[in-house]
Image 1: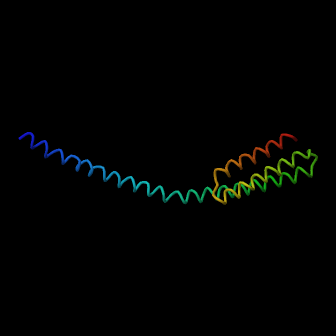
Image 2: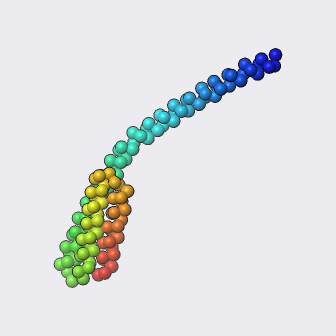
Image 3: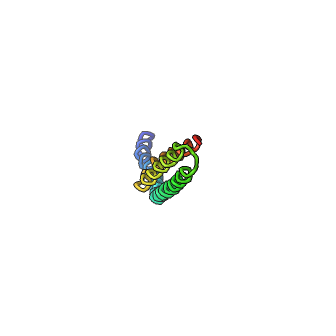
Length: 121
């Protein structure tokens, strides 16, 4: 009798295990579906932030280049501001195309170029 009981229980175990795994799998897809809906909004926001920051830093760099070129600063200073502004403008273009990581690094590089140019004054 023991042999028949064990054989009756064994086939039932895989069915119970499979049934227990199915709700978890369904719950995982529901959680990930909510995440997938949030990503387009996050990506759009990142693009707008990259474009706006790039445009703002471009305007600031060009204004600083114009102000420094009118003063007694060495020629390298306004050139550095203009170069940094150009790099920030390229970051705005990259951000508009969806290359937000590259845009971020371009913004950092452009700001560093402007800061380096300011050190020559």
